[in-house]
Length: 97
Image (cartoon, rainbow, N blue to C red; front, top):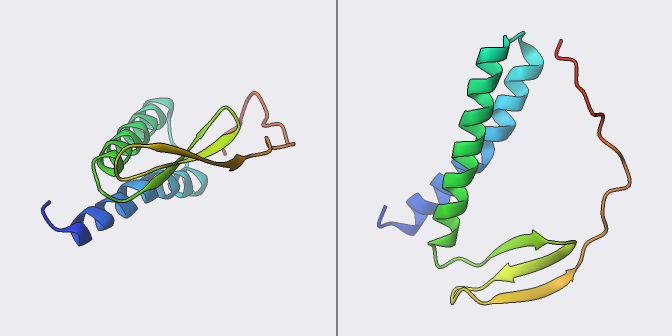
């Protein structure tokens, strides 16, 4: 992965994995073991994408305690603005259909 274009493509691909798996879940019935395996794959892909992003020279954004920060190339964290918390509540339990 010496090429910045390859790195960006990998970041995009790994970032999209979660969305693709969620779409798959809504279209098909999946047993608990499969759901667990998919959830693990999403977590691993998200973690790997985060680690790769942190090792690039491209600034990226993170959220901490309701505040948006930009992580600069030199790893400096710069405050951007406060973010309002969402006003909606997610249900405690979901029914997969």
